[in-house]
Image (cartoon, rainbow, N blue to C red; front, side, top):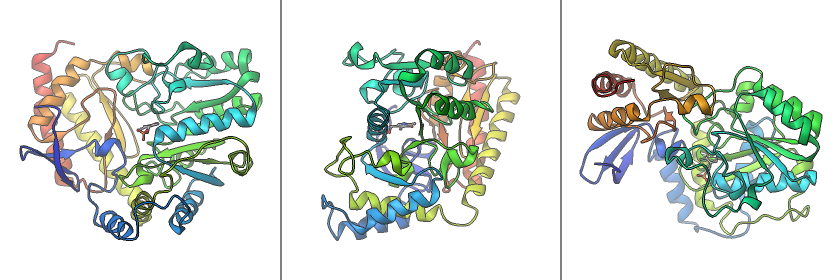
Length: 401
Ligand SMILES: *Cc1c(COP(=O)(O)O)cnc(C)c1O
């Protein structure tokens, strides 16, 4: 029955090769905030394709995209397009090291920054789902300058920076951790990282590949009011096509070749199809009240799931921020990787399969997020909550925890 193979998708619905229809909360892992095959995105891609699929030199669409990003994201003065979130974090890290002339980088346990070698340490997403600590193929030497610390533990960061602050090029963080399930930052955590980076002359990098354009027009940095030096973008900015971007203060970005000497390039970067899809998506997100609507829908769903869990007497902790979240099968609050790992993956597996049977597609792992989008209607949310009531009964019957 799983994995399902998708035949087509529209709005919040996926249809598999057997003709089963699912309400989709994965949304291609986040990009499709306006739903699948949004007519404006499809039309933009069709129109762009008729004018050429790749040029390898700049086009006006790239400029328009850069202007949209600089307009919305508070800390970005200059931005460069790449082809994935992984490329964005790899490049931002190289830039941070090139700019500071330092080697060390601090990341956080359970945060995922794509599959670049030097960030693949105590990583979230597939790495935690499959229970592997790192990845074969990444030599120790490559990660010897990577320090991974507990998320939400500012004291640890302070302690480590007291030792290696002067060698630290960057602190990279998901401003809302969304690859170990969803774990919001504790009040003061992001502010504290900002302060420590300033004190030690390290760059603060927000990996906003998931949070960018989702929490607010300006992403998590707008939502929480903490400005990083560099920002990584991906997912929504491509409107469902392969795109990433990184940007920040002009002084730092000018260190990139050809203005500076830190090298990074990409054959298909700024690709016209991807730019047009992304611009269409960002256009949709400009409509009045979009973010309020998304938050209301999500709050409604989370309330329903909470009540369903209580009614079924199954301990579930639902974390959410703006329009994404995660239900952990746990009795304890989940505020870091360690507490996330205490949740019952066995219960989640039962829940996932039961939801799937009832036509609701969730991420097939406890350590991923659900994404609510503009295409989810109230009836879809109600159907999801009803399905959850049934599924949670099954969890109650089948799992002892
Ligand atoms: C998805 C994700 C990435 C990687 O992006 P890809 O486009 O899959 O390479 C990086 N960082 C975060 C926070 C992500 O969620």
